[in-house]
Every structure is written in structure tokens, then in C-alpha cells.
Amino acid sequence: MDERSQIDPELALVNKRYELIDQIVDRVVRRVSSELTLSELLDRVLLHRFLAIPIFLAVMWAVFQFAFTVSAPFVTLIGDLFGWLAGLVNSHILVGWLRSLLADGVFGGLGFVLSFIPPIFLVFFALAVLEDSGYLARIAFIWDRLMTRIGLSGKSVLPLLLGFGCNVPAIMATRVIEDEQSRLITILVNPLMSCSARLPVYLLIAGTFFGEFAGTAVFSMYLLGVLLAILIAFVLRRFAVRGEPTPLLIELPEYSRPTLKNTTIRMWEEGKIFLKKAATVLFFGALLVWLLSTQPWGAEVADSYLGRLGHLLEPLFRPLGFPWQAVVALFSGFLAKEIVVGTFGVLYSVSGEAAIGGALAQSMSPLAAFAFMAFVLIYVPCLATIGMIKGEAGWRWAAVAVGYELALAYLVALFIVGAGRILGF
Amino acid sequence: MKAAATYSLGLGTIYLGMGLLEILGSYLGIRPSFIPHNILGGFVLAVIGGIYLSGVKDLWQGRREGLAGTLVGMALALGFGGLYLLVMGADFLSYLIGDLEGWRPLADLRPEIWLAPLALPGLRLIRQARLARDVIEGRPE
Image 1 (cartoon, chains in turn purple, cyan):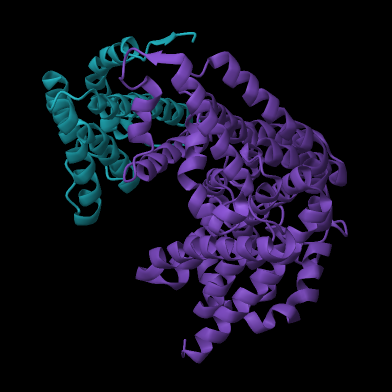
Image 2: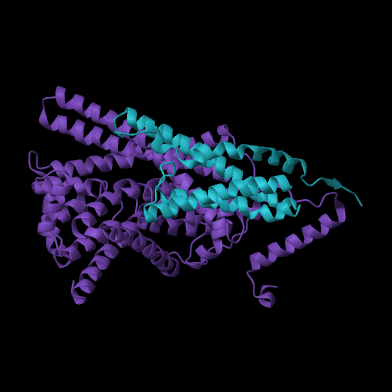
């Protein structure tokens, strides 16, 4: 059958099955009304050839606002709570190392890891609403043709867009993708979607070096991330995660009204997986970074093991034009990208964005600064994201993600510097 | 059906107009006080307007298919109205905990919020659409 029709055997089977169903329905069912059902009526707009994608983008905007704007005060409250606990420790414990361990290591680490809880739970609430309403299946349908061309699934578009907010809930959101290979590729390319934590770094560098073109420089990072994600997805499908994407064979469910009970239960079931990880791998990872940045005891960050590592690896980054402070900042950004700007402040002994920008302008060329922005976009995602990749795909693929992103970041930064020099920048 | 067509035309024009004003205002610096300047917010308003308008022709010609635009437009109008109320609540909480100094409630009063009540009459259309669902009768051979 498939040789004659030149179509996928699975699709051919499904087509035959529906032909048979239609024949039986015609014989045993009489329609007394030819009017459309409510679902058919809604699909006329939601799957409309011109309106479907704008509606999808509007819905995604709503998910973003819900997950990241509505959760913002709760993130602050969690940070404040652990800040207050750290303050208590600082004022009551006199032993220096114990004070630093509890205040910076334990409460600092917990505050960082647990601050992901509000957006993660709200993302899962929104996903449950989309799935229970029947719209999630339509999203897969709308995007499937385009996404399968680059080796992904129609449902991949959802976690990829969520990655612009935060890669951690975005990687967890890949659970909506049934095809394991497409899911794995979506997980691996997700960190290339520029999360909001990278924005302060872009704003600092772009504001310092690119003046009236700062907006264009920042936008170019988002565009670069999307283009690299497409390229890497294509390469992974071709060489590492072989096999054709499974054709989309879904019956579009009837639209229905989600219930608060169901969506809350599903939010909790998915969200508690993050809580378990937060209590183990993420928390101990944060402690390890604290240890590296405070030892040997009493040393400044520049002389800590983390700082020494920065000095040690500086020659490797010399072709890119990065000073040693930038290398150390990249290391601290391994914990969370938000820390990069603060690390610059500590290393240059200045405070305030303007002062940090001024210090950076003395030690980096605009070309190196642009390459640094690209490096921050591409190199290892934050610790929480790596922990999530490990949890969803295993250590092996987490190592693959870290490895390819480090290599890609270096190559892209080198290309920017090389091409820029040739063009006379 | 003509009443529904007129209603959809009116609401579609208002949403589309507001959306375009917000988008263009962001570029050209035309910023009436009642319209914020957020390109993506303007895009959403324009999409809702476009959805309402998509069904007007069918409704005017008496075809029930046109109700689709009114129903989806209403769902998005009410959904975004509710969402921006939540955002306003979240910003108020941020203000209370000192994370959003100088916040004013009016700054968060987006058109989606004050236009949402206009979408409520569309709820009657859902009832009509439900009542008119296919009735399927088994006929054993």
C-alpha cells in the first residue's frame, strides 16, 4: 500500500481506518441537523489559515504574563524570606565560616533554587488549562508541519517559547511532547532560547558599548539564539538523535471547560517533581559554587578557587578579548546568569551599573563585548537548567548539552571577533 | 443574526482601533492617556479585533458560522481582561512589599480590562451555539 501511494504507512493505515469509520457512520447514523458543533465552530477561527498563528501568539503572551509577571511578587517574597533568614544568621552567629555557610551557602542557595517555584507552578497551571480545554492539541496541529522540517514536533514550539522566560519550567514543559526523540532535541536546544536572566547582562554591555544601537544589539542576541536553536535541532536530528519525527496522528479533542480541581492537581503533580530536585541536586550544586567562591577561607573572590580558575583559563579566552574578570564572571554565571553583573562589580570594586559599565569599557573592546554577549547567550545554562536537563534526560545528555554549548559559545564568539576584525571593527 | 453582526462589527472595530493606536503610538510617540504603549499588548488587542471582524460577513448573510468569530473574540476578550486584573493585583502586591516603587493602579488599567464588560453579551451566543449542536439519532439497520 505505501509503495503505491508513496505516503507514510502509518498515515495510510489511519486514512483507511477513517474511511471505514465514515462508511459505518453513514450507514447507522442519521444527522437531523447539519449545523456545526461548538468545537467545529471554534475550530473555524482557531485553526484559520491566517488567524491561527496570531491567536497562538496572543495565547503565548497570556501564558508569559501569567507565569512570569503574576509570579514576580512571590519570587521577591521568597528571596526576602531567605534574605531575612541570612540576616538573622549574620547577626547571631559569630563563627565566620559557619555564618557564611548558613547565610550565603544554605539560605542563599535555597533562596535561589526556591525562587523558581512560583513561575514553575504557574506554567504548569497554564499548560493544564491549555491541555484540558483542548487547545494544546490544536497548537501541535498548527505548528507540526513547520517544526517537523527542523526535526522537532509541533508541540515543541510551546516549551521553546517559554524558554524566553525561564529555561527551567520550559524544559519541564517538554513533557507535553509524546515523541521521545523530539522531546530530547527540544530539551537540548531549549537553553539557546535567551531566558530573562540573561537580559541584565545584555543591557549592561549594550548600554555601555553600543549607544543608540543598544536595542539592536540586544535584539540580535534573541535572533542569534533562535537561529542557533534551529541549526542545532537540525544537526542533532541528523547526527545524534536519529530517526524521522513521528507523524502527528492525533484526534483533535472536543473543546471543554477546564476545572480548577483538575488543573490544580496536575500543577501540583508536575511541580512537585521540581521540588524534589530543588531539595537535592540543585541545592547541593549551589553549595558547591559557594564553596569554590569562598575557599581558601578569607580570600577575595578573585583569589578564591573560582577566581584562580578564571586566571588559569584566561589564556584560552585571550583570542576573544575577554579580560580575566570576564572569565570569572562567566564562571559565577554558571550558578545563575543574574550573578554575572554583580560579579563584575565585586571584581572591579565598583557598584552601580554605570560604574561597572565604565570599568568594563576600560578593559574590553566593543567587538569583544559583543562576543561576550553572544558567549553569555550560548554557554552553559544556569545550574538549575542543567539539573533539570539531567532530571528529564539523564546525566549523559546533560553533559552533551554543557559540552556542545561551551564549544558552540567559543566558536561563535571567535567567529564574531574574527569577522569583526576582518570588517575593520 | 444581523444584531450579532452589528455587535461584532462594533466591538471588532473598537479592539482593532485600540490595538493599532497602541502599536502605532509606540512608534510615533502618539500616546493618548487612556492607551498604554506596549507593542505586544497592542498586537493582542488587534488580534481580538480581527477575530471579531472575521465573522461579521457570515453573520450579516445569516450564516451561523460567523458566530465562531464572536465566540472566540469574546473568550479572548474576557480571558485577557481577567489576566490583566491578575497582573494588576500582582503589581499591587509588589508595591506593598516595596518592589515596585511609584506604582499607580491607573498605569495597569489596560484597555483589555475596561473593554471586557462589553464582551459579556456574547455569553448568550454560547448558549445559542450549544442549543444548536448536532442532534445525532441512532438508526439501526
